Image (cartoon, rainbow, N blue to C red; front, top):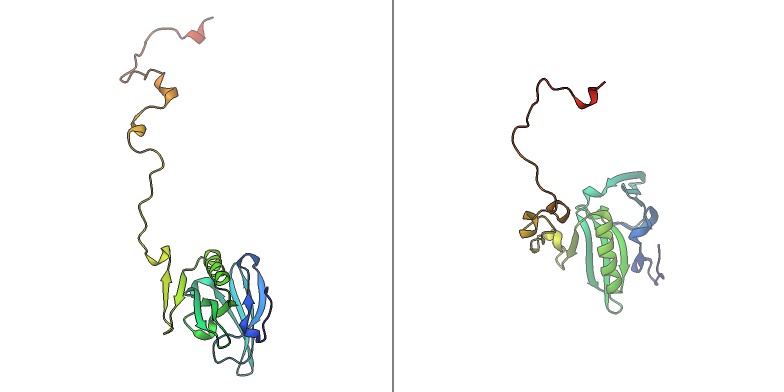
Length: 185
C-alpha cells in the first residue's frame, strides 16, 4: 500500500497494478465494521473475513467481477473523493483498489487496473448504476488499415523473382531405354 494516509483510514488507499501479488486490509461494503484481509495475485482474489463470528475464506477469480469501476463522490471536508474498485454484483464483495482526492491518480489507476486484470472500465453514476466506458463498451472504431498483401503491390512478383523466368507448365518428357548419367561404368 502506497500513499500518505489521511486522518480517516478509509480516505486514502493506493495499490499499484504492477505490484501483484499483494495483501492488504480493507472494509468491504457499506455495512461492514471489521476490515477483511484481501490477497490478490494473477489468479484472482482471496478474501478472509468474519461472518457471524466464524472465519470465512472466499477465493474469487477475476471473471466473477463486473469490471474495474470508478466512483466520484463529494467529500464532506473539501472537494471530491474518487474510489477505484474491483466491482462485484454483491456490494459486500466489491474490493477497493484506490481511494484518493487526486483525480489524475484515480484515472491512471483505473486504466492500469483494467488493463492488468483484463476487465472492462466501469463508471458508477450517482444513482449507483455502472456503465461501461472505452473501446470495450462498443464505441465505434474505424476499420484497421491493411498492412500488406492488398492492392496493386500484391499482384506484382517480388523483385528477386521478377528476374527469373517462370518454368514451363505441362507434362514433362519421359525418356525410355536410355541409360542414366550416374550409371556409366
